[in-house]
Amino acid sequence: MTTTARSARVAGSILAWAIGVIGVSTISLTLFGVLGGYGLVLFKTGSMAPTIPAGGVALTHKIPAAQIRTGDVITVHRPGHEPVTHRVVHIDPAAGHTMDWREVTLKGDANQAADPSPYVIDTAPRVIASVPFGAQAIAAFDRPAVRVTGLLLAAAIIVWMLWPGPARTAVVQRQDSDDDADTIDFDEARDARDRADANLAQAAPNPAPAYSAMLTTRNRGAS
Image (cartoon, rainbow, N blue to C red):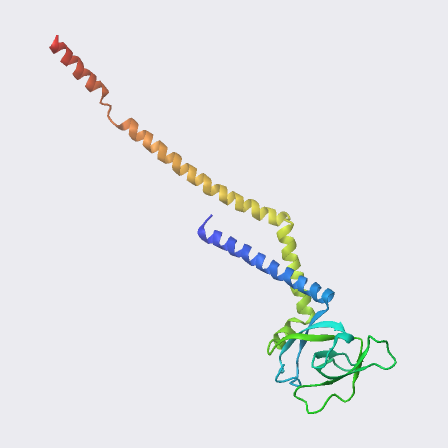
């Protein structure tokens, strides 16, 4: 296997694992958000500026209304309208409801007046952190088609990696064959070297006969 092929194989494996990790992380974060009551709020307007400007993103955690305090920034759902995320400026018990309900008055930090009417809630997502950017990027990836496609692609790659099919097995076998070919080439080179050494040893003159003849002549002269 050439160096280029090895590099391509390693790069492909790294890319597959990276996509798999991203997919698993996305699924895990989605489940964590749904089960743990966490979510994201994208700010289209600047009603909460300068705390959270237009285009900002906030992380929220759903809590009971009894835990809401003045000064908290919460999101309330309005029937027939988009949810609003403003700061709590006043809290009252909710008349005609149990003790778990609250009537809250909200106001945007950039607004001159509070919202027209209070909201009656039993739970609400409260902002726990925010950044002043990222809303447009998240909105683009949050489209159902993009989200479903990404999850399906990540799931397909994970399945392909963990459950080898015929095509995957063929790739592995071909890679093993390439590795074996590398080993065979190395062994053949070593055998060729050994054969060359043996041929050189056979071709070299043997000084033993001449030395024996010299010893015989010397012994005869001595006698």
